Image (tube, rainbow, N blue to C red; front, side):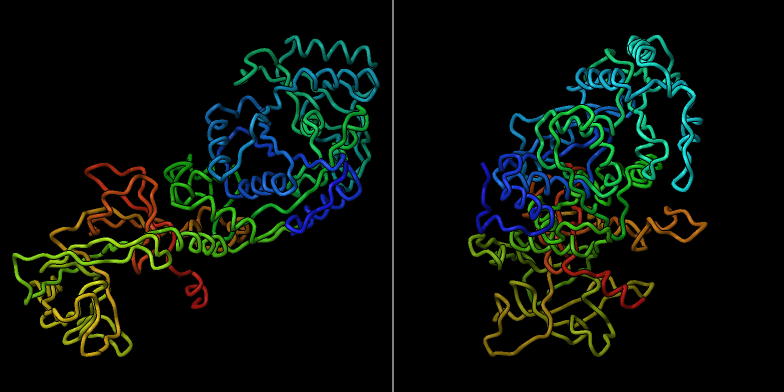
Length: 563
């Protein structure tokens, strides 16, 4: 029975328009059934997040279903570790597949039976040529292909050889099973594609049952068909494969899902290629798959991104048929918008400069009230300690400030956040002429940051009480690459030559307000005036580690304008 889209189901992009047209026409009885089919041979990245949000989100929007199906057809590259990580990442994004978890290996027996059917129908044959000869025979887009000398084997001979392949009589590479389609097709995917190859490899689910494994192109469409998928949503690189998938399904006479292709996600200042990401990890250029600079979901989770921000980002960039490069700033802005609402504020000083309040008693300290989140009244307030000796940022003081520098300098008065006005009276230096501390006086009448006499100051500084400060290591993460598109480097250059040397700056000796010691691993917070940060997994009781998730502003936008 067809379903008429309700106002809340109004299409927002071409994929949803197709679905709504199908529902209006009664196609698939109005059903919407999608799937997310990752290969368990690595960790998911941000590009996969777009696909996850599209497939699961589409099913949710149209009251349908979405399967999680692992394409486990390459046993040499697959591992249970990746299966577990994929499940975890999909759930982290906020989606669930209920009892609809499947593996391509679930269908190996059925795929084998269908392969035998094509052989018996004269639509597939065993080729004993080398892979080099097969590639040469398929020629190029502008050249006619050459038929294999084994192409005209009889169905009986092909069936015998194929069964012996399955029985393990042959070595890897000795034979393959190919579909018999059209060696002169302008679509290279139709030039007798390989369906099965021999691999004497242990499979993480089927063990040693099989020594022949199906190629992805043979597995893809039939797996969708078996599961009753209505809309098979793929990235654009599979557009030229669609005629092959259609051919297989038509020859078998089975349920025919509709394949729809969309443009994959490409982000500036990063790479999405699994091969290149693996090269970064194996080369020690990053600390691992969960390095916060990596575009893996594991990496962005460790960096402090939220699933809500990722889903909002995927909604914002939309779904198109055209490949493009999305500015990383769009993603970071989505992260900022989300964290701004949810993160409590705290004060931290990354590069401390000692401040002595000379007219404040040595033996005194007091608690001041600080707002936790001005965007969320329900977050309430907290108490922060104030004492004679404080820390401020080194960058917030200049001995000879230029005209437009409004922060602290000799003879100048500024506001300390939630505290008092202070005025610099003296600068203390060491024998090398380096500033070691500054001496200030405070106005006790300005408690809370306001002057009863109405006088104004031009700067408000964050600070931490030295007697109560918590020491921490703070890791400042930035763009992984210096150039916008590392996939398009100048000729003769290696893409790795353009890694950003400042993508990670470790700051030791940072001083944090004491409440920041109480946060658990992964918890997020805004360091006032500095950015959003989260507690890293490397944190130990004796070593507090915070990661910068994102700055308060897009600092690279200004840098690009200067260039």
